[in-house]
Length: 68
Image (tube, rainbow, N blue to C red):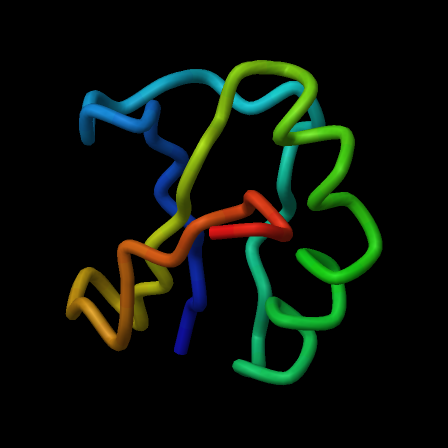
């Protein structure tokens, strides 16, 4: 199983992340990574993320804005 993030602008357009993600083997690993780098991603232009497992959307879009 592969857990991946999709990075989007506030309008929902896919964007390249400021921090290159790895391919995660568990949901917990993917979420822990996001918890460590979300500020860098936000500063780099990503406003929201969506988590998928093997191409199937699990949840999102989820705002990276602490106030959102």
